[in-house]
Length: 234
Image 1: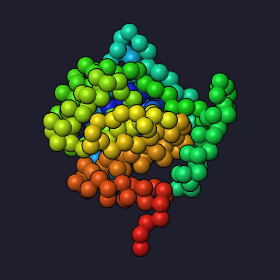
Image 2: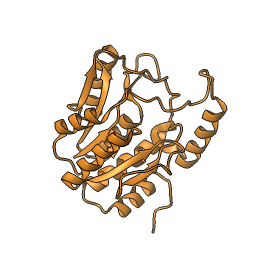
Image 3: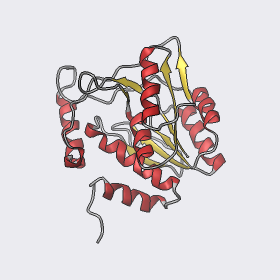
């Protein structure tokens, strides 16, 4: 099993009549891992509101478990702006898309009417939230910390992974790759924006492969090759 730590947001459908989705990087990683065949639980927080209800339904459609998703009556579920639809995901150049999105997000700073914009964070989690959520998850082989963590939160995920002997993947915030991370963790820097979910798909495939028992280095090579980030050998 894979546990993904990070709160989802509410993402409206790309077109009128489309079902809402669970937005945010953590939910996208969890969905990608589920698509790769893994059993996944999302540890996070949403508001106790209609948007939070829609997020739970979207996670269920994506075969992502939400037993560890806390409901908060005091705060609203964040909304993610609708993304432009992609006609054929197989035509997306992942490296080019991420570079272009970072450029566009920087150019559109302070504007909300154009550009992909930064990834919208969900409700924050503190160390106690993470510890409680992981108790609901139970045993897991891979732990992905998708949202930025403070020092107590980082200690909780590191201790939880070490206690069960799980692999730990930490997603550093954009520009924060040099910041401290638990020893032994695989650390990846998140892009400022993730058009087409290509970065989330990479992390989800990586986690799913390690959950199957694949060595971390080989899992990373396979995940990048499958996503078109590098030419596969042979």
